[in-house]
Image 1 (cartoon, helix red, strand yellow):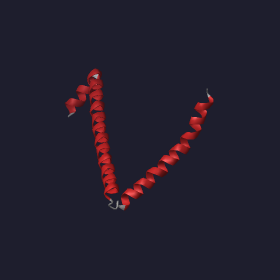
Image 2 (cartoon, helix red, strand yellow):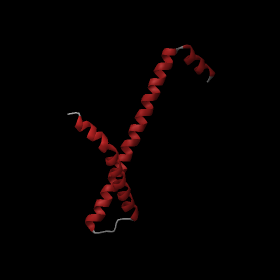
Image 3 (cartoon, one colour):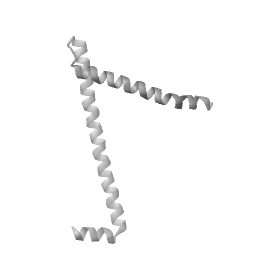
Image 4 (cartoon, helix red, strand yellow):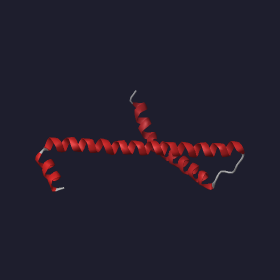
Length: 91
């Protein structure tokens, strides 16, 4: 381990390459995690849609998520409203 530290401290170019590779690996991991999250959310939406169409009762969790998302989007809209008004005034 000490040899590795000495190697990188003695070769700044090799350290820069190693940092770039590490960042690329980290970003690749986050990209895969986001893709997995999107697939899970899509599956949950399909399940909720199936329950709605089949006449089944959706769990309380889905209702709570729906209310949370609606409130969050409303707050986001209110937060961004001054920005949109500013952009409109620049015409």
